[in-house]
Image: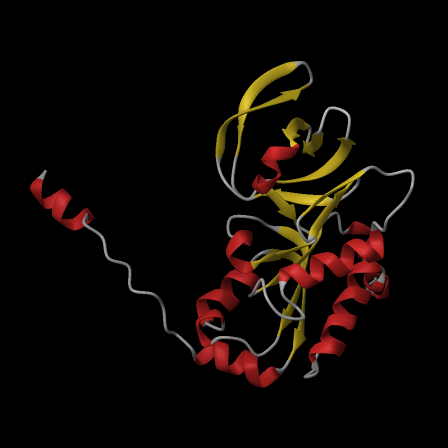
Length: 217
């Protein structure tokens, strides 16, 4: 979808996410829809998108408990992601109790208790309870960065592309975002920026001592 205005890109993405997929014949077959964006910042970064989408599909409701942490508000029904490895946190699934929730796992907030000061998240059947003091481990995941999407796949990916720092507009990043989609990819943005990404093959130099260690062994 060719568009240059960030405001129009934002509004188009929000419209697509809410009910715009009905224009596609097989929209009823889509079980997962994910917005993936290069940056956290800006009008179409994850922070702004998550705030707008929460207002759109899971607004404030007297029937839903919520907990505010800084500028963010977690609400029952919100989509969230674990953003750091936690090998010790307990979870329960069908009577089985184990531990470990890892960076990139996505779930839904099912219960918030201001009495016990806890938030319950369902990670595909694994139920985890966070104390309010542990909420720095999760963030909203209606929209996620390309970096956080690595290793995951979704039926539908909505990918907004706007002008940003060149280090975020690379061929590798574009490839990663595109290959997250299993059935449908919708790119909303400026074709010239996409061309720039295709031609921008710069990548970070990674220094490692692995070669030396292998030779020593």
